[in-house]
Length: 68
Image (cartoon, rainbow, N blue to C red; front, side, top):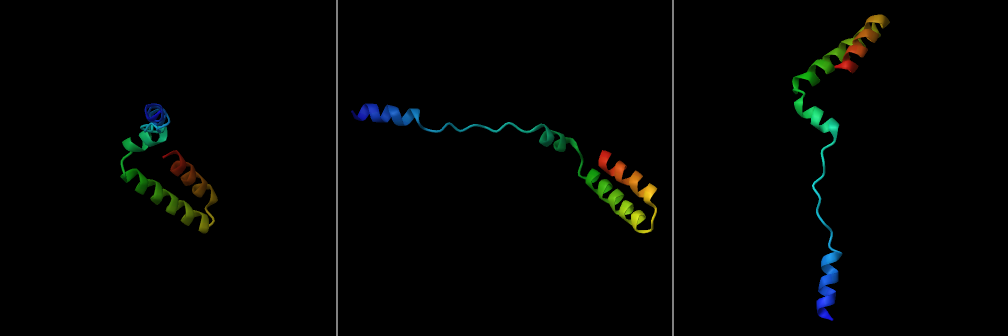
């Protein structure tokens, strides 16, 4: 009987799996860190343009930041 309980415990042991990376994580691996600074700067200027009522320029900068 002990041999059967040992075999049963081997079958029910969890198997460790290596997680597969998501496509977005692979994409972020190739984007340089400096790109984040460019997006942040574009967003800051966009907010500044919005606060001085330059809505059109603010919208254009927001779209540029979203694409980048």
